[in-house]
Image (cartoon, rainbow, N blue to C red; front, side, top):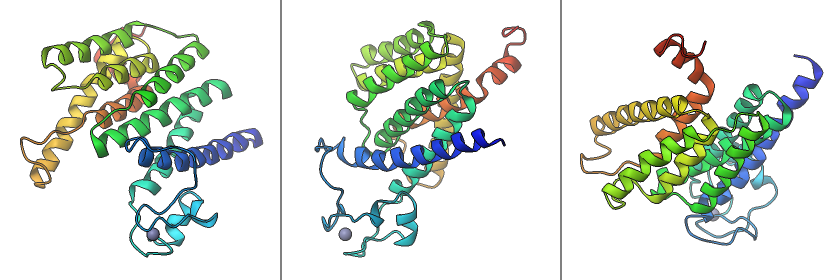
Amino acid sequence: MVDSDQFWFVLFAVLGLVFGSFGTVLIARVPAEQHLGGRSRCPRCKHVLGVIELVPLLSYLLLRGRCRHCHRSISVVYPLTELLSALVFLCALFIGSSPLSSLLLAFSLWLLLLIAIIDARTQTIHDALNFSFIVFSAAHAVAIGQLQISGALLLALFFGAQWLVSRGRWVGSGDILLGVGIGFLLGGWEQSLLCLGLAYILGAMAASCLLLLKRVSRKSHIPFGPFLAAAALLTIMFGDRILGLIVPGLLM
Ligand SMILES: [Zn+2]
C-alpha cells in the first residue's frame, strides 16, 4: 500500500465508524419518531452519555456492553451497526473508481444498512431514509456515468404489483421505494433480477434456520428488507462475475 492508499483507508474507516455511531442514533430515534437533536442517553436510565461513552466500538468494549450508571446491558445492535458501517465504507472505497464515487457509494450503502437494521427490528421502512437512499444511489450512478432506469423500474414494478395484488399485505409501499434505490445502485435490469434471486435464496435459508431453531413459526412475518440489502451488496461486489457464469457471453 502506498501512503495515499493508507490515507483513504484510514479516512473511510474513521468516517464509517463516525457515521455508524450517528446511525445508532437514527435506528433508535427514527422508528420512535423522536427528535434527532439533543445528547445521547442510556435508553434505560436516561443518563446523558459522556465523551468516552460516545467513542464508536471502543466504548462498548471498555464498558463490556453495560451502561456505566445503571449497569444494564446495551443492545449488541449498536456496536454491530458501527462495525458494519465501517465495513460498508471500506467496501465502497475498494469498489469505487474515484474518491467521489466511493463516497457516494459509501453513503448509499450506509443508508441501505440502516434501512435493513430498522426493518429487521421494527418491520417498517421509513420514507425519509428511503428517499435519501434513492438520491445517493442516483447520484452515485451519475458520478460513474451509468445512470440507468431499467433496474429501478424492474424492482419498482415487481414490488408495486405485489403491493397492488395483496393491498399492502405482502409488501409495504416502503419496499417499492427501496426497490427503486437498489435499482439505481445496481444499474441494469440483469443485476436487479440477480439481486432479487439472491434475496429470496438468502431469505429462504434464514427462514429455514429460524424455523429449525424454533425462533419463528410458519405464520411469522419475516421482513424482506435485510435480505434485499445483503443481496444488493453481494450483487455490487460479485454480480458481474455471477452473471458471467450464469449467462456466458452476456457481458462480452
Ligand atoms: Zn443506564
